[in-house]
Length: 141
Image 1: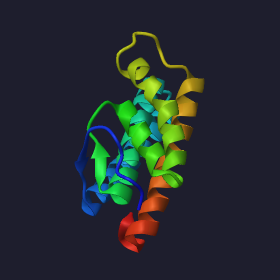
Image 2: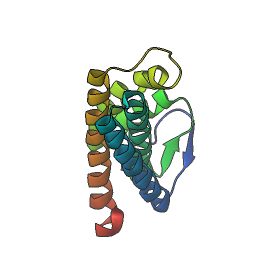
Image 3: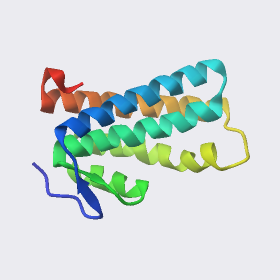
Image 4: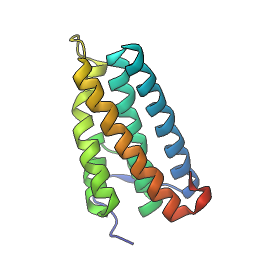
């Protein structure tokens, strides 16, 4: 097991890791459906939330904790874990800047941005699913 990450964290169980994974899959489905419907803002926002939940699933299963600070702190936590978590950190880092654009900015989200967001979310959810299956066994996801 790796060293505990720096920053504010809270303990998280295997059951919570599984719950985070399920949430990430739900957000990903909503993101994909929104993209297909041409709802690019919703696609992007849901992609960001899918990534945040997937990152929490990975952190919870591999360290027994999740970040409680800023969402950007979760990126550092995943990087510190290493391995698959480092790959997940790259996807989360790509998506986090889109959160404000999708949720608070008055400008529309373009189809290109939404597609990239859904693709990145799919990658991190896939990583989380793989990590949980490997770590928690076949019932991990």
